[in-house]
Image (tube, rainbow, N blue to C red):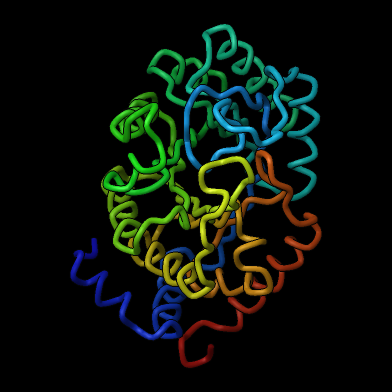
Length: 313
């Protein structure tokens, strides 16, 4: 584990040197592995929470779609498409603080059918659930629970007031107690400092999460962060590289906002240590065509194979 002082020293390095260290750590600890996942918004809108970045909060006028839990047939069709597109994981995502027990039971049946009929690993992001609900989902075949901490504990109250940082941490620990792997990361570009991003990474490291998604804010009209200034490409790449060095053996997954924030520099995220990607669009924001992302993955893998030392890079 890196100390705060060591991480601060890393952040002072020239970007090319920091990225090289991160890329070397990725290849040393995880080889040429590259993980793809996709998500499905199975229940949208009408959320009671006030997350300042979220289009689905009922407190903001964003024009985001609102609908109840989708049918098992729709979910199965989407899971099959995700597998055909090359995704190794398919995640069910619902809006709202949590789910009612009948909704948990219905999703559990859907998860069981996905595992039996589609054969893709199933993840879920369903809010703040208790042990009983998570155990039901685990028994149905859920392999991983996604629950972001979003940002540092210090900055959290500036973007969310309707639930606490401690509730997020408790949910992660409960998911692990239920025998689930945990995917947890956050959003950068909320107005937080570089120190906040480091604090978030160290919190995640202390929780021993299994996968770390890094989202980059997409300012949504109607939300409090609609006018938030974007991060520079360099800040984003530095963040990815530092996360890789803090998590040398975990998947670092670039997710929402990568297209608009990195634009033509998306490939550099993988030289900065990322080795996983969310494809096929996000909850309320469209992504790139899957074919474009798959082409990028093939090119990255080829370059990783040819580049086994910093001297060759």
